[in-house]
Amino acid sequence: MKFTIIIPHYQTGKMTVFSIAQFLKFKGKHELKIIVVDNNSGDGSIEYLKPFHSEIEIVNYPKGILQSHGIAIDHVLPGVATEYFRTAETDSFPTKDVWLDYYEALVNEEVEAA
Image (tube, one colour):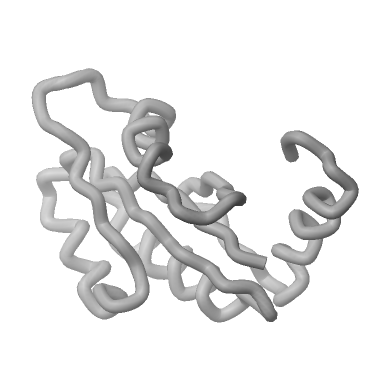
């Protein structure tokens, strides 16, 4: 199954990198796209993500408008190409390959949200 993970980022470079590494390491049998929304962090922390440039998409949130994780997610949601997505904070990460299997089971059971 194909999933997109949306991660809002604000001044948490090392945590975001660890989170991305864990998502990629424990994606199991699933296809995974990761979108990081840079909430104008301005501290250079987005540079920590450079090693993943070919594996993730970084979207810059517009300056000068209300900043929040929820609004940042809404900003990129129209561009999500997979049928299913999951939001994540920079301090959330899986520890086993089966974490996406849980969501796949919910989809197959036709649960509308999880």
